[in-house]
Image (cartoon, rainbow, N blue to C red; front, side, top):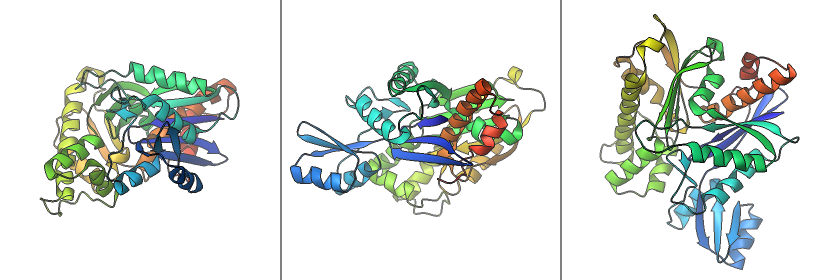
Length: 347
């Protein structure tokens, strides 16, 4: 057995193969602090709400954190910020460990192979990913896994472009970062990240409209569409404006970063957009419209998005883990693993 793990700023997801199906487990990567009482802890335990107690505080963790934040008019706290472990959050490591343990479970055997996502260093920020990557590696190793990082953009290539010989442009629009990878026959030609994603959209929208960030996030996740028919003065109108600005910023950096000398003449590739930030209806078409006007030194054969964009990175990490495990045990090719670990498999 092997597993894939997507360690995202907003969500943590794992993928594992069970027969012909891929099973995904997901938790929101956040927590909220509430006052401790015996009654509160009893109710949380009875309702199977993921939580831990520390001194006179109770921390509600994962998917329930946003609900509790809205009920108690509090802001959720995040173990990660801008795609990596938050240096401003003292509880970052114990919280992310608890959430990860819930998502990935125990190894099925000692030193089970696990590939986990890691962002590229951002080109528009002094942030580095080394501490984040090595801390996760140590944490997963302590849990009994044999962990290996995989670039987040490359995971998209593994997940979505097996039908194109793992050649194309994969873009993961996460909450903290946007990761970009151009690959040619599974060999990365260009990979980078930018320190903007869904959180940036939410924060800018909150500031512009005077709406709490968690409320903006809830509105965005509740059937928000990029149709530009919403009230310009409202939250959805502001979300549309900042989404469009994010797409332009990503395309601008792709144009700047791609090196013509590294691109084969006449290269014609598909583009895959994934990640939770790419989930709103209309995102794929809007990105394609803006990309068509960009001066990129290769042709785009089309822009597509998987049915379940949230699962792509975990699925690609699983493909990589199973492919390497298969190479050790002669259990199959990367193309086979990609087909079996499709994010469209039953959740």
